[in-house]
Length: 225
Image (cartoon, rainbow, N blue to C red; front, side, top):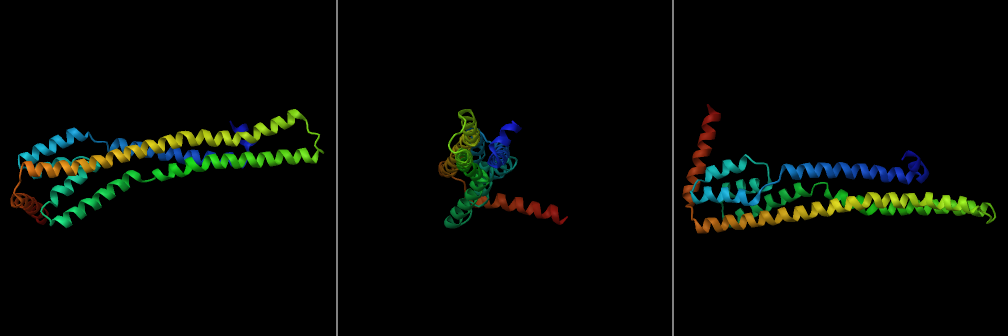
């Protein structure tokens, strides 16, 4: 492996560095997505159960125990439902954007590496071919066929290496993009389902405010003591 890298020249080491960065990003994003994975139907069913029972605080407590975009969005929804409609929608939109930003973090790096590594491989091949033909010219066009073939396949190493890195990186990029898109739709569905739940099972806003006020008073009492 080291011999192939040396034969391919400095471009091979640049591509190798890109592959290490891409691998690190893929592992980190995979672990994060696994950590923040949520069973949408099960989560929504439990939240709607609390809402139908007019137990908003239990719904908030249940959501807070989880570490997902859906749970954080649910907490914000329930805690700010007493706000004015335009303010409420602005808060939800801001939180939704923040959650998508967390999911998309570092993913563009994969796209960049996936597009650049084939080009760097092609650059290495072109540079190798230039060197090869310079040798032919220096020999007055009387180059040995075996030596010429050896020079060409050596030059092609960088293109092959660049494609070898780019293909799995782009596959991972599209995987994460589809995952982000699916979770974004789940957040949209969640808001829609919560709105529908409150319409089907009307919860008095004053009742919600009283529950939240009790919780805030309890929090202040504990910390003041």
